[in-house]
Length: 481
Image (cartoon, rainbow, N blue to C red; front, side, top):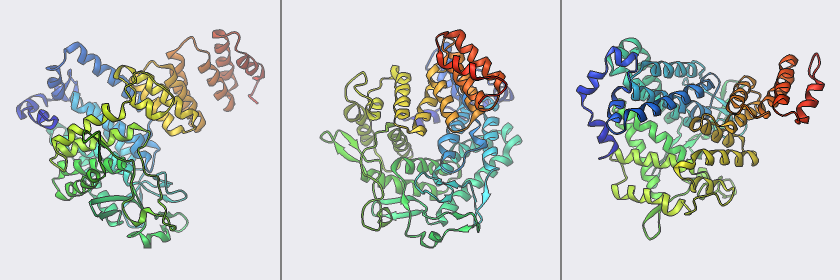
């Protein structure tokens, strides 16, 4: 049975019976989806899973990315939490998850600005990571965040108690999502190509001195840069959610057009047993420089997480009856063990590709820590942060996760966040002096000499031979130099 059919097999009567004031407010055990899950696993295991998940997401939500992030980071940093809140509501029917999603969504949306064409946006410098010097917004970031918002809005509107409380807000979210589609369509960021269609990053931005578009706006129909496959697939997932809720075939048609192109890029390997596809491929003249060379390399990306996004989108297309057939899903499954995995159970070297593809389920925390460390050594701090953040979620008592998140936050000047993470590291390993020494250095940089002394003393009480902390303590007097 397909996943979609399985979920649809839950009767409407079951849903209606569960959607009472008690089920919505006290989160009694699992809610609707949880009752289905309870039939598959024992209650003790199910409760344990739910408790672990809740602890992790509440901890991660303290980052409050919704208050600060713009551009593409809306997708990579805000949307995972929005999706988590949506899934939390589906699993428990506790309205607190809906409230958290609404809180984060409102905080993000209210920071939007009206752009030259009248649409709302969340601009920043280099919004997609490839438009250096340009100030603009990101289709990808908005699509990733709007997907769980659209799905949660649908839950609100079809649940009487929630509709009464938040129906107006839910409708405003759906209206924003529709306007966002119109925005990027009107900016000519959709291109029809030989085997389907593709979204491009706009080559223009906002001139912050005049508040008008940059001169590249005049070339918007021909300039740009094709999003790589993983980003195309994130946008397609948003469009499928829009179709599921609004039933507007335009959204489905755009997603289907991309999936046709995606399928045309998937090559058969292993005698037709599995699929191989590149991270990015050119789709039109806009993907070439003036000298004819490509704007991006073509090949398989070493970060397997990007392919995880692709697989999820292909499965969603299949579930919607679009483009992909069952035999192709079988080939997709075979891609992992027959192409990605090198048959080794341990890590042969520090290559991120090998670390991703040589990981068994029981090794996920070790792999995340090693991946984070690898990217840290390569000075790719964004990817390092991502893996340490994932490590903190799947292994909430892991010292390395919090310590590295703390030092990365210090590097970016996010001092409050750094303090939280380093304190969490100290709690995770009470026998480590390192977290206290780092806290001492942080407080020193802020001129908080009393707190700095306390942390250095704590570090020395754990490790009396820590000469760095001893010298730092000696330097601390009324103020920190």
